[in-house]
Length: 216
Image 1: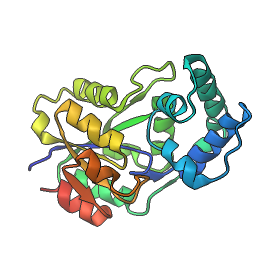
Image 2: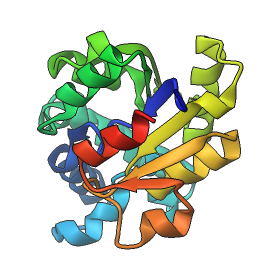
Image 3: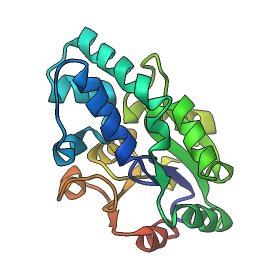
Image 4: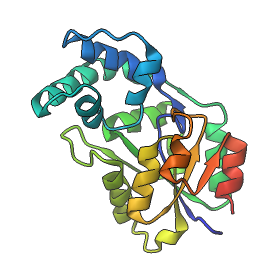
């Protein structure tokens, strides 16, 4: 098999969490007197770490960005986490990959405490050998750190056997930084041309196409 270890992003790759993310972004921004109800404009927040989003898109300084994250999580922890759903076909994909002998690892920028709850709720946890995510204190706040942590903890020595699957440029660029292959998925939150411009090794339009790529 070409790729034995499949690293998977969560938001926009296995689950459609757009509603929860956008509502929590709106809630956080409203605390600073910023009202933005155009979801198309807010989609850029779906993918990057929150700190990066608030500093880049809103020009917040360190203190303000951290406060915005607190507001975001204030709503997310009780409401936003459940404004979510597993994509149709996500569980079936994980079943098929597991049956084919692939080892599946979740690699998400979402805080680990939330990621664990989500994959458990949508019955995806049994297929995952390990979950790597951020910590609430800011530890592993980049996708590169998330991937490196997963590689370390799963004791993978041959990086040529790993492929990272995700829907945003951060997934693709982090995979390159870690020296592993990447596959972008178009059914997530990427803008047109984003995955191509990031240099994804493969791009899949749906789960069937993704399976064919991963089963090489």
